[in-house]
Length: 245
Image 1 (spheres, one colour):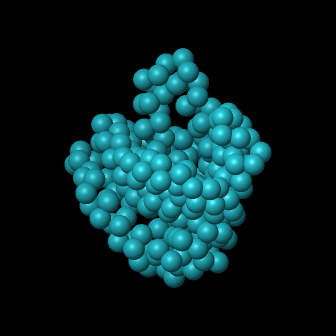
Image 2 (cartoon, one colour):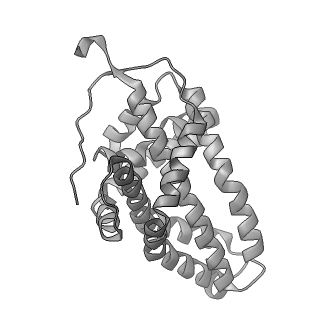
C-alpha cells in the first residue's frame, strides 16, 4: 500500500470563495460508480456480518421491544468493527482521486491499519459532542458540524484524536454555514432512503431486515465518499497564512 502524504501547513487562512455542494456530490458519484465493486466488497466483508448479527439478536435474543439493547449492540458493532469499512471506503476515495490502483486488499489493509486512530478519534470527538449536546444543544450541533472531517483526516492525513479535531476545526474555520449545509444535504441524501428501505425490510424476517440494513450501508458509503471529496475542496481552499510565506 502506497504511503499517504501527511505534511500540512501548521497555520492556515481560509480562502473567501464559497465551496459549492453540487461539484462535491458530482465527484463523489463518479468515484462511487467507478469503484462500486470494491466498495461493495469492503461493505460485504465488514458491515454485512454486523447487519446479520444485529438482526439475529433483534429477532431471537432481544425481542421487538428491547430498543435499548438493540441500540447498544448496533453502536458497539459500528464503533469497534464498522469503522474498518469506514476507513476502507475513505482510502478507496483517496486512492481513486490520486490515480492509484484501488483493490479490495489495499482498502481492507488501510481499514485495519487505521482502526486505532479511528477508534480513538471517534471516542474523543464523541465525548465532546455528548457533553456539549447534553448541556448545550446548539453548541453540540455546532461542534458536530465543525468535526465533520475527523474520520477523513484519520486516513487522508494519518492523524488522530486531538490533532484530527483541531485540523477539522481549521478546515471549517469561517465556513460553519457552508459546512452545516453540506452535512445537512449529505444527511438527507442518506436518511430518506434509509427510512424507506428499513420500513420495507422490517415487514419480512430477520434476513430481510439484515438485507435492508446492508442496502443502507451501501448508501452510507456514498456519504463517506462525499465527505472525502468535500475534504479535498476545503483543504484546497485553506491557503498558507502570510506568516508562513
